[in-house]
Image (tube, rainbow, N blue to C red; front, side):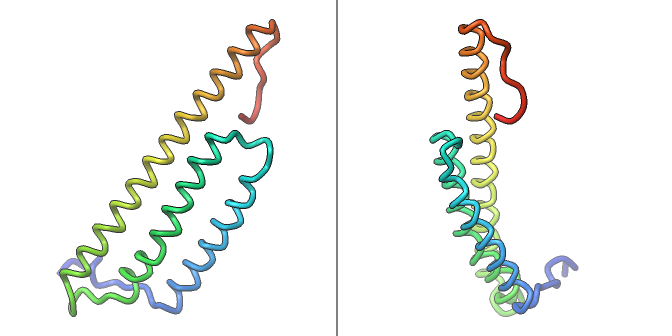
Length: 123
């Protein structure tokens, strides 16, 4: 058997860790309410946060509550579902990068039209 498959995270570690990550996601959700956050960025990041909050219970279940020796099919399906959700989360990160590039290009274009040096720093 592959050694990686035989390592499980104890529920006493996995559940509090997932709860801490969920609290962090909810805190960041509230921070996105600031006026300086563009609406497109807010929507993309909130969608990503929803995906993360959806993935956390599955990760806890697969990593600490499901035994691959007892139910190998559920173990495999659970991990595949988690990996697919993580892939979608990565795609939302790519969408966020593309949106940031679009916002930055619009900001630079507006600055050029006004005859001002493009803004520097955080976008």
